[in-house]
Length: 431
Image 1 (spheres, helix red, strand yellow):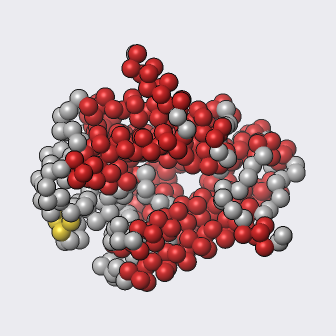
Image 2 (cartoon, rainbow, N blue to C red; image 1 turned 90 degrees about the vertical axis):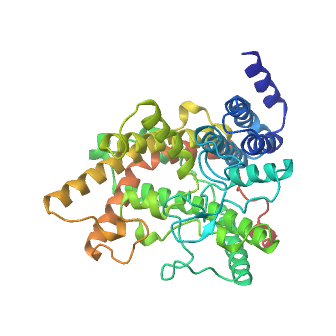
């Protein structure tokens, strides 16, 4: 108890950026240095949690609300990442992977010999810290035997294609610049003047169906689309900038920077939206605790329907917790945030969708479409099936999206919301 209080006091005394750096270094050391069975690994968890708490508590006092939101959300992502690799699966320097694996180059599913990083030649403190640092940052575990599912390839036609270093750096630099300019352009829009359009009372849809107008539905659709585009540009811009810088300086090779997002044309189902199109950066960090709960605590059999349902719901619920932490970091009261509800509803929608698809396939004795199988997208549903799918996804998002967005949109002007960008090129040009 005293140790926990000391950690919390320490966390509240440091600026958020310092806390995040301390959290990253502490997590890296706890993964790289102790043995897999060491008591240090679980003992570090409360300290890292205190860092996340300190960032959530004080972030808004040190920086813009949107910066504080990103910092708080990322801090919880680091915490979940450590829970996965440091405590549950116990990645370690000796194995160069999870506990129980051999320290050697592994053959991954594509036949390429690789590990998370090449095995260090000597057992030194520096090499252990470097291994821990790379492990914490490798959210998708690309090009390893433990690569998360559905990480996009550089080419849909040639899975082994990797662009040249010069081509890659130029493309990623251009992508980062374009994302920055588009975010800058979006930030030039004036804030909404009629906040009643985002009243939380308007979040429910079916209970108000007789009074819902076409204009309101259009606003809901435009709001969720704009929100998704903004998130896409932020994540893509950040990845492109980091990729260009890392590859240009020789810190990491091109092949470790596979695309962040899949094809928008695959977003004809909720399963594909979250499993193929949207980024998979958090997939392993969210699913590892869920699988541990199902298989190690509840002792449910693998591949059973009940196990799958609990894993899906638990993973989305954890995502809701992470994004709630981001909202709290920006200064919003947790009671006003609806993001947890949003992600839990996504899980329910996905489970319902897959149940209907399974029932349909069983009834008509159809096999699973090849487009729904990992790594095989040569076949796809007919165009009319895709159109129905796109309509279903859009309708579901129009229904559920406001639970996340409306509380923030209604509060933004009162918060003095500013652009997430540090500098506006368009404002500078219009001086």
